[in-house]
View (cartoon, rainbow, N blue to C red):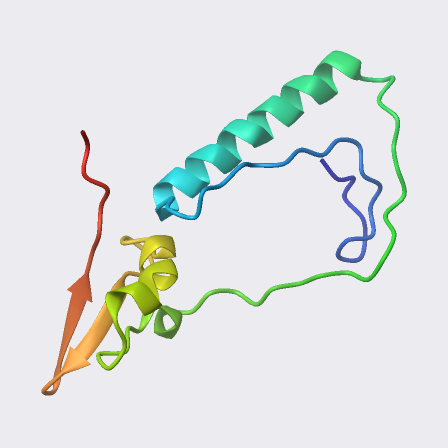
Length: 115
């Protein structure tokens, strides 16, 4: 949990947490874990407030560009295994995985089989 500041990665850190991933999570599973952790941090902060100690950030700011639709383009010459991470992070409402074949564009979706 960061304090809002003028520049990216400049605000103090109040709380932090790690999210355990196994590398098989699909986008919605990742977002669900992230949301649960965020809500937990908010609860912790509110329980400690106003006695929550801040830590100053060190190091260089990190910034990732906004994802674009073309970032979800699949390569027909690569295997599913090679592109699994791309497939699993696609959000099917905003930036679905897709490929082009013979002048047409196709959307490819994956979901975990429930057992």
